[in-house]
Length: 100
Image (cartoon, rainbow, N blue to C red):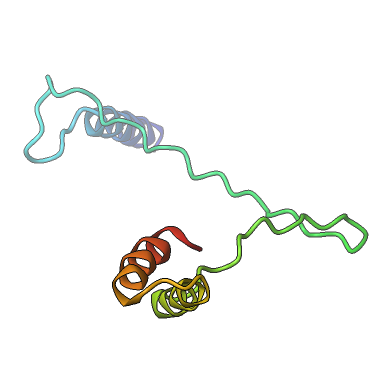
């Protein structure tokens, strides 16, 4: 009985040592080792706003008026200045493109 246990142990040890040398299909003994997977991404918790924290001022500029509104305003200014129709047209084109 002792002899059969020793034989079985040696047999299992030999199989274990041989299984470490078995390569996957399509692999060679000269292939470089498989690279390690990249580390998992870092997860950061966003900062929670505080009730007593000072607010940041908004630095947005006011929106630009429409082109039609700018032309109308420029035509009104030209008429108030006493320009004739041809001069109003030239003034309104220049004025509307340079105004806010």
